[in-house]
Amino acid sequence: MSDKEQQNIIQIPNERLMSLDAFRGFIMFWIVGGEALFYALSKLDGVRSETLNTLIIQLQHVSWEGFRFYDLIFPSFVFIVGASIAFSLGKLQTSGSRRAAVRRVILRGLLLWLIGIIYYGGISNGLYDAETNRGVRLLGVLQRIGICYLVAGLLFIYLPVRGLVMAFLVLLAGYWALLSFVAAPGQEMVSFEAGRNITNWFDSKYLPFAKWSGTYDPEGILSTLPSIATCLLGVFVGLLLKNKKLTRGKRVLIFFGVGFIFVLCGHLWGGYHPVIKSLWTSSFVILAGGWSLILLSFFYLVIDVANIKKWAMPFVWIGMNPIMIYLLSTVLDFNHIAKRVLGGPVEEWADGILPGLGALLIAVGGIFLIFWLCQTLYKRKVFLRI
Image 1: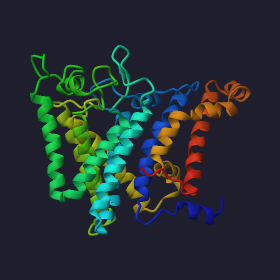
Image 2 (image 1 turned 180 degrees about the horizontal axis):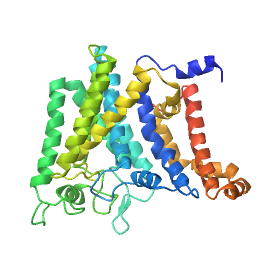
Image 3 (image 1 turned 90 degrees about the vertical axis):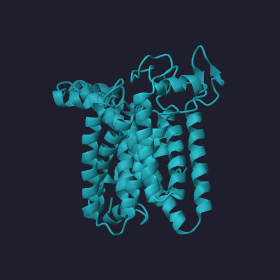
Image 4 (image 1 turned 135 degrees about the vertical axis):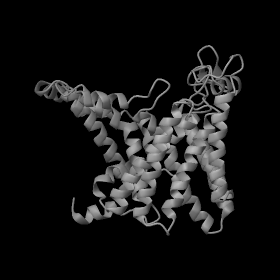
């Protein structure tokens, strides 16, 4: 690839921050291919070590209480959605078109919610079968992203910064108080255990149709409230990134400093108010938000401050089309496609050199296909805008 071609690929529209797109792509990378790559690496004969074992554990969700790297993926994406709100809606507000901003927020939020319902099967299994718990799933990952975008977007349009801060604090404090002082009906005391807390009870009572965990949903009704706070945290970051009075260096220090404090407070608070992703507890919001800020400070420092960009382009390709690649990854098994080329004799030959090398080649081939597809869409300026 010539220098001129590389220059053309790295050109990002002025109104976009490359670090945000790269961070978004980094998060999506673990969903669509990164996890499979490290699992394949762990099966390589003679490679398994304590460090790799620790990494593999970090690529698994905790069963209930606690926090691992893989528990950061979803809240980080919601966090970035909030940062994007400050840019996209801020531009519309500057042009004086509040009505257009409101229309965009409502349409995009509802569209994401609808796509989420279709993603989980739509009405292919009927509305609901109580015996099998199959049917329409009203709340899920994409639905939560849509709701967070909708509510945080409307708050951003109608409230000043002070009002947004108040909304953030009310959501965190209110949800903490609810979980900490209100016992689920039928329970003698407050509990954070699965199925015995007020959040899970509320879903079992008021969330209709299919639920991911049978009687309740990890993306349920009440737990969506603190996820809006996660989105608002991203909005604050977006506002700081747009603040012309702050130098880039000061932004990095603010993001890292606040992130470090949030991580510390999240861990300390977790001793009294457990860190539970499935409930999206307030301590989880603070802890995940802190790590999101620290990661963003790294991407912003390296890409937008130090201007070291080429390494991040694969992440940018994914980050510019996150919803599309997320949906495609459920339809297309990239590893299965790669296996058609790298399986059979090639896999056997690789395993003959080192047991497990064939599976690793297939995983690398799957990631290559994802990067190639995203790069092609990026170069052709084909983006799924929701």
